[in-house]
Length: 157
Image (tube, rainbow, N blue to C red; front, side):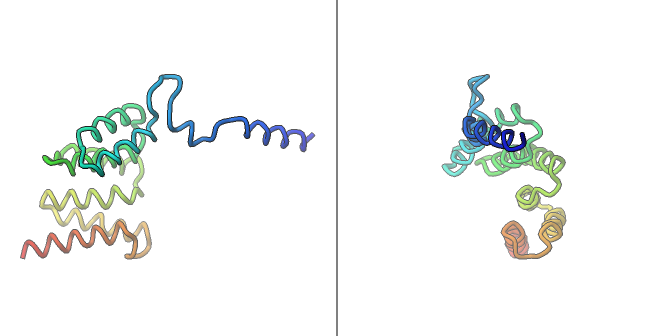
């Protein structure tokens, strides 16, 4: 009986589409799924097309309001656009961190946003959090934020 059940599960799993395919398109609504929107937004950000990135991300956040990656990328787009919107960026970074307090990219990026807002002390708080999360000072996010803080302080002297 157990072997029949296992064999049945294996066969049925081969007939179903892969989970990655499920994330690409929501057939019930006919709209792109959040994973696809995130991909499009990243491509748009890479091309400095912030209006399209923001449009994709604002739809994605409506579809999955509890997704910390969506909030983090939305905050990033608000911060990096030609006319940065720091209040909206901070709101979405904070939401990403409420949803996932260990979100390493959100800690790095909110630290960079604090530097843009002339608040290096708050940036250092997130640098210390990254060190605690990783247990070292060699992770990419820690190094990037540490470099941004150094650049900020060097320009202030």
